[in-house]
Image 1 (cartoon, rainbow, N blue to C red):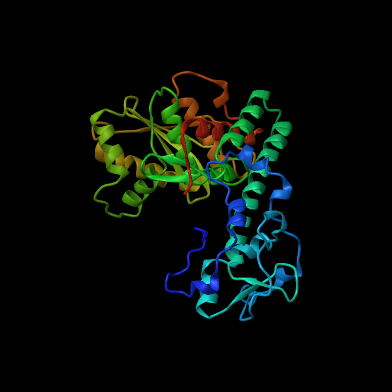
Image 2 (cartoon, rainbow, N blue to C red):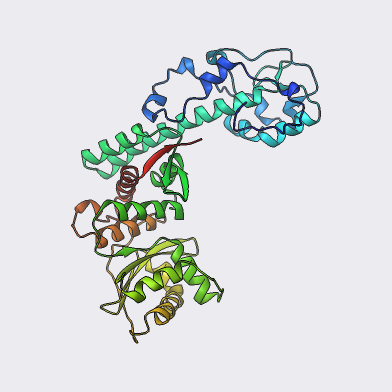
Length: 380
């Protein structure tokens, strides 16, 4: 049975049945299969997903008490699945309820009066996962071509980004040590797009920067700004968190310069650099108009933290680091990461230069950095 759909052991599994083994084998492409090999699967070896008026049926109306009057095909070339949204809505919970209520069949995706075994829902889920993966990775390759042409990328960047997409396992995860694994498809969807960058993607990029080059100074993970805000602005008590960890690093001198990525109200990314030797706090922001109403409180928060752990510095000077202003609403994360990467690295390199008119180029460079740095592990 599909790992996606798990039915309680006490449910009447005889009603559910099992899709033909040969069909499931064709639908469940191994996780370690590369994107390149996935996209090479011939169309006649994939399920079809035609339009049908049945998409308007309520989800629970797909299940019936009628006996099945048709079987699932044994070959994927004859296998039809409902549209993606319907495959997702006919999920584990509804299937479990259908089994428990004694329902015996599910409607055919397009044919009236044709009822399939309940196990069709399991096969549909596998087929939808396969087609959704093909759609996603095809879209990312097209994104690279469009962006490269629009922004006039160097040919080596276009080629490298496509090669990195094609070489990863299609259902892989990026392993962040023992902490957790982030699906590479999610990373690609956020990085290779116009979507706002999430904390997971920012942390992946920061860890990649820390591992890939020799640095002038240290970069904190994005959770530090959350801890600082909770400790000094919201007055929440924490026994142990990143505030104390990095505070002690500054206190004992093991960290002299610290970059802090700052997430403002889940709206905007910028970064703050603390330099103990120079007694300077630097703010680098690609959209200062957004940050301005909050900045005094944020700086007060950082200074309270520094006074607690580095009391030998009585006064802190605040300066603004010049960084080109972004021209859109979604590039703050990529711009911040490139600036951190550029300022932290000992060796200078033009690939880390932030260009407001080429935001997709920045995202491609960060995506390549992540893929080149992290261990790819197959999803279970």
